[in-house]
Amino acid sequence: MTSGVSREWDDGFVVRRMMRRDADKVISWFCAVSATSVDLHVALDVAGDVDEGFYVGELNGELVASAALIAVADGLSYGSMFYVDDRFRHSGIGRRIIDVMEATADNAIVIDAHSELEAMQGLK
Image (cartoon, rainbow, N blue to C red; front, side, top):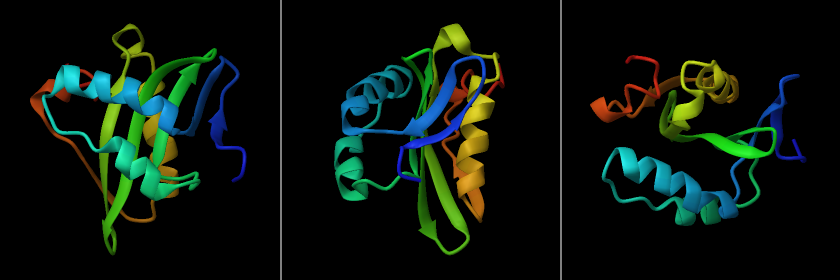
């Protein structure tokens, strides 16, 4: 895929490749929920122009969600940076970005399981 867009919906929601310019916003979201060290800039630099693995969701041009998927071993990928803006939780946007992530992985996916992230995962 060369456009960077993984999937589009009629309601204006788009999942696309995360770019370096998106990283600061994603880092601020994730660190506000769970204090952590984030090397997202480095990971994006290493990934280069690869369209799969690092995603953001935009609704009518506004960044509202993120997710990252990194292969860590044969048959296993690690998902992180999963975030949905609190205005859009329980709207299906999180499910959409995870569906795109799952469609690119041909193996098991393990995601961050901090209790602070339950709201993003629809568990609260």
